[in-house]
Amino acid sequence: MIIDTKNLRIFIYQEVIDMRCGFEKLLHFTRDKIKNDVNQGHLYLFFGKNRRRLKALFYDGTGLVLLSKKIESGRFMHITELGDIREITVQEFKQIFNGGLIVRPKVERSHVTQVGQGLLPKGVSSNFNYASN
Image 1 (cartoon, one colour):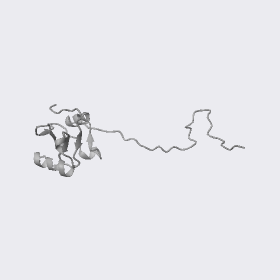
Image 2: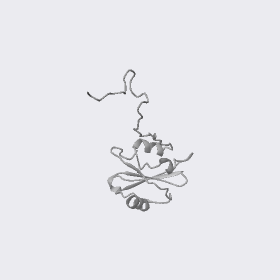
Image 3: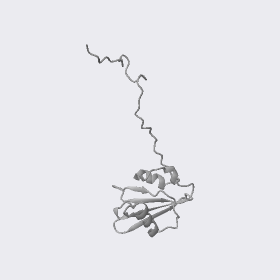
Image 4: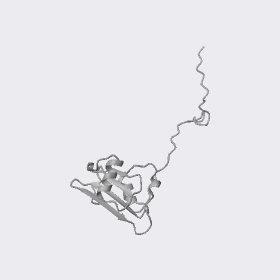
């Protein structure tokens, strides 16, 4: 790729856009809606409504670079499939760019346990007597 992927951060624009947008409009979305400065070298990914095209905007140190891809068969994943994901890895970007999907596992973060549900090893009693005579 023509992009230096070392320390590259990739941000997803959270709304579908008109794929006729060029440098200036995408720069406006980046500055005013995402509230980021494109000159930091990050990549910003934009999805179209019909999911056959996507665009990426980044600054390579000398100027703005606009990547545009029209997929020939199939469709790119829909922006709603990303949920609240606002930043992706380089590997996930490559998957999306090649027409794949990214799916992150949904982990339930509940740490509530119930007493007496067989959580102690066999032979260990949960009946502790703290009373001293």
